[in-house]
Image (tube, rainbow, N blue to C red; front, side):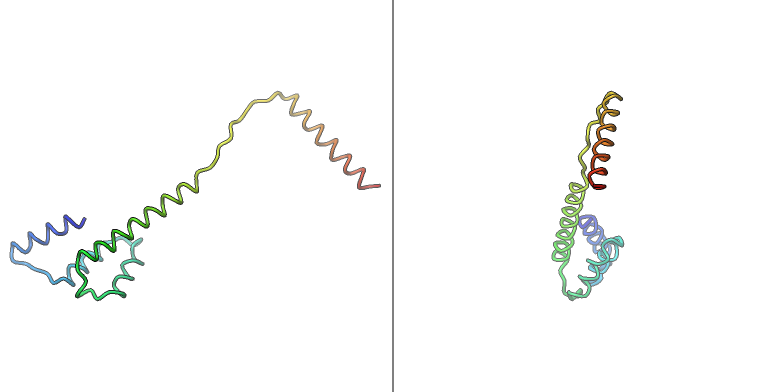
Length: 114
């Protein structure tokens, strides 16, 4: 993005139209999407836009972009879940398990009644 921006600005200079550093910085900051609003606001409030070099602005924005990508990668890794393989069992073993469960629950019930 910065390379294209620089190419356009240089072409405009060749045609006789030049912009101040502050105007260039504001044009770059204005093109970012809403998800970047907190970073853009922080730059506008923390730095003097009239003296902020374009390279320093670019470095700051690239650092923020790298940080955002790292956070996204961490979140994607956390969301991965473990899948269990399903196995088909005989219905008799299910019934045996059910009978065993009911029996153990009934034994506990009788023990509690005494």
